Length: 301
Image (cartoon, rainbow, N blue to C red; front, side, top):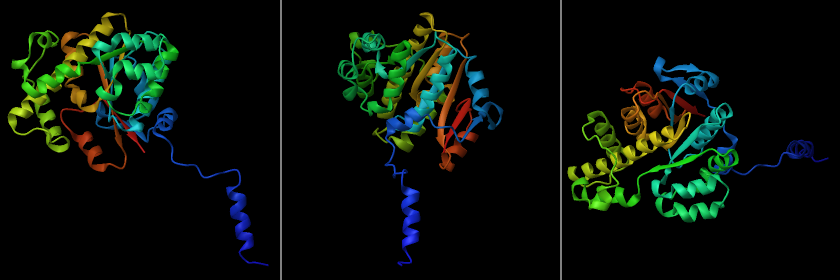
């Protein structure tokens, strides 16, 4: 008898009924809503807390900022999980999305009302041209909003306005574009420093200080337009607004949260950022950064 036969039989039995799974798709990861490895409360020195305790605190806020890395399915899984949990207790919750620009608000309204399919949503919002990230990462969130009739808000400034500011600065805008500008605050030194550091580390687009300044002005136009739109949602009757936006737009309470606070001083907010457990450098930086980058860190395996 072949001495290898028993071993081969064991392997065959072990794999029977347990076929090897291929890699999970990004959308499947979002839908799975993976458990966090841990949640760290930065308000209390990075103390580890339970998910229920974090959610209880989030429910006390009028605006909840869930920062993302746009191409990371785990970050979107975190957003999907938190949004589902919050909406379970609050049918008046609204969602604001950086991914859509203000002029396309009627399209989002049609989506939530079930008047168009995903292809229509992509085409009419010019998703591929204006946002460009894989819509499958956002599909679970979009479908949740439609299935539960959760109002969606197109938060962002039009690309035409942002592009004009990035290329020419605020001073050279024509009147139609200037009319679209939100109220801007240009002298937040901490926010400016945070943005410039991000540009140096990950986005070396600008050639010289003048170009960097124009990019900063364009960032402010985005941030303040989103903040203004969040306040519109609150004024429209939202019990709270869950904001899905890039981490740089919300980190440290600068950007969009500061814009909301300035317009509605009585509205409390919370910030959740995600980080990978094996990215020790990023985790350490977030744990010890000043000012505090978020209220909570959602740490992925």
